[in-house]
Amino acid sequence: MFHIFRSRDLREKEREVDRVGRELFKQIAVFRDKCRSGHFPDGVFKERVNHAYTAGYMIGFVDEKLSKLFDSHTQKSKYAARVFTAIFPRSGVKFIKAKYEARELAEDLSHSKKYQEKVENYVDDFDTGMENGQRELGKWDEEEAYVPHKLTDFLMTGVIPQIQPKNPPDGSYAETI
Image (tube, rainbow, N blue to C red):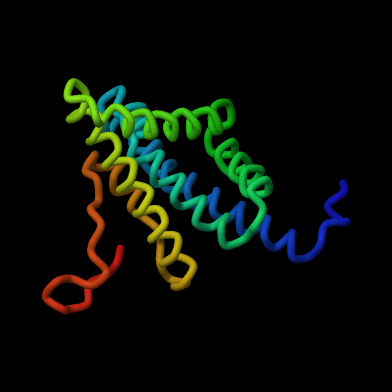
């Protein structure tokens, strides 16, 4: 009802936020639909959606866009919550916060020999997801025809898409995504 009082600039920013949320949801929905149709054994959907890579990718994708749109931490938090709640209505914000906190805890535990190997993988997977999300968002913003796919690729295969170096050692140009 009060949308008429919002500035044109804010309405455009909100459209961009919604566009980001729809794109993330679309990537997850492709996998969800394959799981529902029996292409994957029971439990695979939950396992891969709850993976550190998935959370990292989503955070990287959303944060990269929100950092371009808003200066205020309050606004970034508000719109991040909007995106994550739209994707996971009952648990979106809790899910993302829990995964981020788990990443921080894993980094702290990596100094302990007892947990080092297990938590290093978590940190690496999360960070790779975050960087892939940031890079894909950048490419999606720059190239109209580009379709983000790294989250779907991971969900469908269970294999974490590796990050290609921007400038490979041999001097040739490589795609950054």
